[in-house]
Length: 248
Image (cartoon, rainbow, N blue to C red):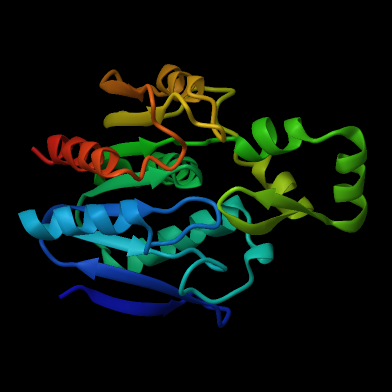
């Protein structure tokens, strides 16, 4: 049975996590924007890891899933720090294989640069570094930008459920974490899975990430009919197979 817990990050906000014991390296799943560790990809990968005896850690950032805090108080720096806090608490030693979905792909790249020899590999699923700037801010009209700056937030419709709130803090903090304008100093094996029917993250983003990574062992897999979620059974099977190849 997985071991689960709630980590107080030091300010009263408690972060939810679930760890399945097994062989190393520990697979760490990093969810996307407004997503959580109970999604199909996270649970499908957890089942796969349990079946092969592989250790796996899942977690929820503050304001997401079972964790405390308000979603609107979060930003890229905060959520990356949340993930690192849970990792350091639940898996303080040993090598790690980071698997990041969408925003989690951005966070995995940020964390990967600081993990050094602990980083055994990295898998991005529709990884979305810099999305606050290149997709959110760049997609706003001048009046919408002015409203965001004036009132501190805007509400945006979502095809996945209720509208979500974009805050000025999210946009401004995102600018301190941009990656695609310079080399990304990660030298482990990296695999990037990207749907070409992704309406949220342009598929060429995966190619841009591959170009910027300093690693020479980077592979991009394009799924021609794949959407942003990549949560169909065959997509999850591809994810598990990709992770499995990095474990040998």
